[in-house]
Length: 111
Length: 118
Image (tube, rainbow over all chains, first blue to last red; front, side):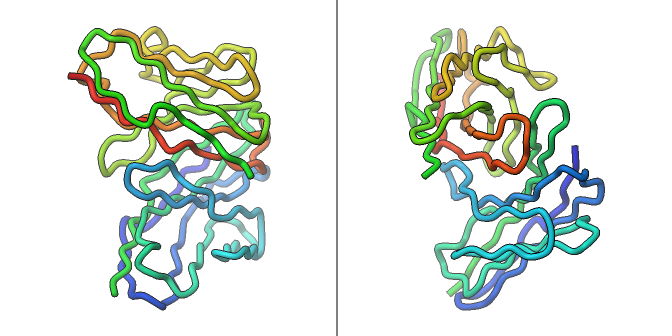
């Protein structure tokens, strides 16, 4: 199982672009990279998923370099409501299906 | 789409009581469901993985007789905390995926159950 490493916390201001990078050096060939957002006392919410290169949806972009040993979640023009914990997950088929949550990145957006 | 409902959202009960938590996938068939436990300001800790119709696979250190998991259908999994004690108090979260053994199907999470044992 690929272990992930993220910054523990980040601060930003409203309207700025925020990039959160996750390292996953031992990612396996079949593994996808998924990012989740969690607010206090709620379950995580799916943000975006990718395998390689760049993926974009209505809320975020995900950049994955060719070696796939890291990934960067990009949140354009953050608002106060984006203050949350962001988790990068690398999950794969290992004779079963399991993903292990890392510590996550606590993003604090200031006015 | 991909909605997971978890019930109840909060439980307060006396020590020694057994508590059942339900996790339902409302608009998709969940071949695999997961149960997590989360302590304050900590990350999610995987407790067990269950596939419909088979026994759950528990993570190391998780007592299977304490935390009974049943995944009887493709839309419902239950976690029963048996003879709960104050140290079982925590935030329990379930997730479901239609992906079976393949990682390109993301997990979709319920909103968690806050369990408080007095």
